[in-house]
Image (tube, rainbow, N blue to C red):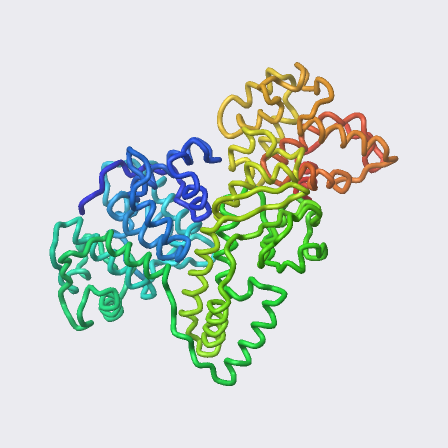
Amino acid sequence: MIMPRGGIDRYSTFGLRDEWLPAIFTYEDEWIERNSFGPVQVKAVKNWLLDGGLIDKNGITPLFRSIREIYFHDPESAWQIIWTEFYYGSPAVRLFCDETDFETELSRDDLVEIFSKALPGLKGTTIKNPVSAVLNMFKLSRLGVLVSDDGNGREIRRIRLNSIEPHVAAYSVIRLMEEEGLREIRIGDLYHKNAGGGPFKLFGTEEPRLRNLLHDAGLLISPEDDVVRSSDISSKKILDDFTDHLLNYAPERPELDAEASEVRRKLIESIKNKPGELFGDEIDTLNGFLAGSSLRDLRIHHITREDIYNSELFRPGDNSIDVALVYGRIEDSISDGVQNVLYVSMEWQPDVDEMELLADCRAQGEVSGAPGAARRLSLKLIGEMVESGFHWYVNGESGYGEKLYHLSEIINNSLSLRIFTSGPENIPEVRGNRNLWKRGNYRSVYEVFLHSRTLNDFRSKTKKGLISFLSCLLMDAEGDWIVDDDLRLRGESDHPLSRMLEETVERLSMADDVKLPEALRFLSKPPYGLRADMIGHAAVSFILRNIKGHIIISGRMIEEIEYEDIKEIVYKF
């Protein structure tokens, strides 16, 4: 087996994730400086991008640009092209493809053993990381279609994928030929155990199906041909042809029978109020592009202009963000929309004929059970949408974004601050590390923020690791501590945590008796928006350490706060 260059333990336990790609495609070369990851994650992602040929020592590559254009029109195929590149650049992916069989149940320990046998000179700890990284990538990217799991995440099984696009199959074959310097290759050679890549090695595509795919892609004159000749075909040309195919996809209009016509009538009636339903299941793809790597959960509503002021559609009173994607051109600014709802007006507007065609294809696909044309046309239109500019409106303010797929980053860095004006995103260091926003149990955070005796004690416990970023909750914009040596606030300020504590004291001091967690639920709403993440654990712990001994809860003075008290409060958020 020929191993790619570079060590195998290059990613810690992190796979490349689908939710990260919109931000990476947005910032390009600047992503390394503008990401919201911890340093270990940054190194892992950088190595994945290097190993996939998306960046090199000079920055982004032509392949990066090609993948970006394909991704927003067919994300699954884009990931399969990236997987092909990983085979030649990532030692972990190469080992996985070369040393595992299809339709075989494999646990994490099985994979560690397989990797260890292939690399006997490496320690088990060195092997476990890349195994975890590959499994993590299956779980959190569109490469999950390459495997099935047992439902509890303990075992996976490689499956034979016959549904890849013709251009993906062709790309996989030509990349193998480029890597090995071949001008021709026999179809049968792609199915040898020692094949250096190809659609079977990477995807398990079976021979009859592969012949048809390569014929459709123009690599075989007839499906019965036995030899693929590269002649003047390059992997770059295949990507260019694929991009052109995606951008200009135009299926023939189907002739609808009575049943399909009735399905179409109901669909047209439905999309008058719910325009997003025209895209069928692909609406989840569009929502995924919009959500991207947003720090907060987004509730995305697809609405018409008539519903802009319909407050019953939205729930803007918790720690998520309501995003209203408005279909139809907005002539005037939305200066008085529903409070704390983010309205997005696209420059892209649907072509009536194309919408009619999509409705026909959707109806025909539903009746025939063959939704391929509808899916492809939906993805084409979604790609056009997310590549277009947009105007945003929230709480009387407005602005412009160059690409709709930039939305989640604009929300993180700007728009969220207009809703949660005293939320944790107002602290750059906290906003800059998305790992702090992951929901979970964080007893160690509770211990530090509630039980540290002095500021020096607190500082000694937050010197390194992820919790060091949380220490910024107790600092102002200049990096000065907002607490004294006894971890008491120095006085009133505009700092988010100071405002949270002040309002908590004001609310609880006015109550004869306090019932938790209900009494602190206001902290989960604007302008604060605390969640059951590390930040929420830290903020609630700090607030309670400042009020214990002063507040009567359920008829008794509270002197001690247990971790279970913290959990009960933040999990109500």
